[in-house]
Amino acid sequence: MSYLSTKRCQLYYEDSAESDHSAIEKPVVLFVNGWAISSRYWKPVVDILSAHYRCITYDQSGTGKTIIKGYGPSYTIQGFTDEAAELIEHLGLHTSRKLHIVGHSMGGMVATELSMRYSKALVSATIIACGIFEETAFNALGLFFLGGLIDFSMNFRSIFQLEPMKNIFIKRAASKEISKEYQDILIEDFTQSDKEATNAVGRFSIDREVLRRYTRHVLLISSPMLCCVGMADHTIPPEGTITLYETRLIKSAAPTRLAKLMDIGHLPMLEESALFAAELKKHFEFAEQFHKKSPQ
Image 1 (cartoon, rainbow, N blue to C red):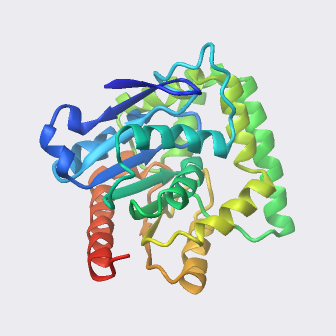
Image 2 (image 1 turned 180 degrees about the vertical axis):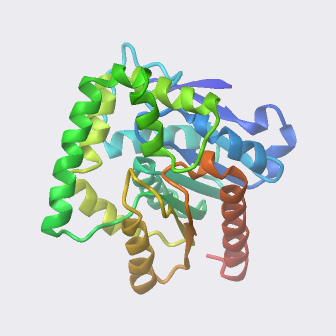
């Protein structure tokens, strides 16, 4: 558990190599969080993967233990990418090809930019529940209503600390039962995240120009990609991640794989931790073999 002083914040991060010095030699997995949540929700998966990988999690500006007071960071994809980039370079993860980047929900956009920026260090990218959608009137209407939901959620978010709203919040995020510990973590993170940051992230996550840039860039990642989606996701429709997979198959020369997790919602790392970790490990091993056979 450490802090990195950056231009944006005092960035809180956890690196499994701090408690297991042998992890320095292992392949590295950097986990990038979704909207209005700290890095704590990765812990069940980190506990499984850390036997084989050096696992790094961090709290983005406006969430968790990261300190933004006195800094005034910009809340954009570029800003969050720069923040993670400082951590990558501080830990020296950009100097050799052993980096796996895993992005969940909004974090998939940040993971995409990091994957582009550190293509020579990247072994694989994983995008979870962050797909691409055709620009139809129906999807535009969906984004409009989602924007309204974000406004409502932020203006009245304290109500989610109380039943029955707490249960409604959890049921929308997770389709399978998760422990009370992590239910409490999700609610605490959402209701205590910085309001300006959370509003900004919610807004740019549905901005058309941001989504167009994401669509272009996610197709350009030159390392193997795993598209992972819970087929019972009530937060972000799973069809977008399936479309991402299908479009990459057509337009990218790099391998693209799909993990469809049946009966699982927006939080596979909590709903089925062992299954999700197994999918990640399988993808990492595939990507490592790919680069051994096709050195660049």
